[in-house]
Figure 1 (tube, helix red, strand yellow):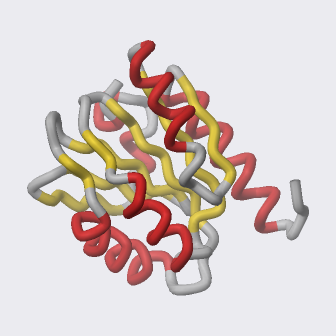
Figure 2 (tube, rainbow, N blue to C red):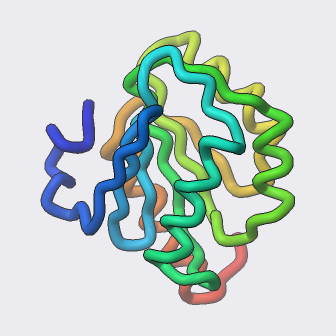
Length: 142
């Protein structure tokens, strides 16, 4: 389900479109929808990171939800670099709609330092991310 076709569309505070995907900023959650066939690298992520830091602030703890409505490639070595440099991402929720997509998440979890959970629908991913954000805001470690 595309975020714009979901019950959460009214919660979008900012929408940013890049040639490789659309990124939605909600209350302490960034939701990405990367385009079909894209190779999503650290270089492509940099402008998204800069936009998020500008929008939320340098010290904000946010959740990231990858809404994988399309098939695309990730460069795992780039994500190692990203998570080594950024402490802002508290949780990562990955929504995959196919069995292959769900399997790929297992491999990606090796490279992601933040709390990662896989989902088969956007509703569960957003609910989990909000819960984790609330826990982080209260200073509780899980």
